[in-house]
Image (cartoon, rainbow, N blue to C red; front, top):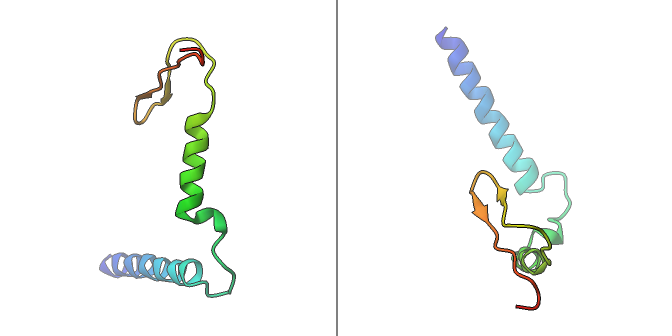
Length: 76
């Protein structure tokens, strides 16, 4: 039983290390997409926040964080 536990821990560690080497260190070459930059994330967040919301009363958009978004008309 102990051999199975040790083997499964070793296989998990090996898989994690290989994933890190392949994806983060770019073992097979390639570059990180430009959409993974901080500037791109900031601009995407600005675009999402500026999106006009035309709906009824505020609703829960994300049930995990329970964020309510207050919907105002463009006139006010």
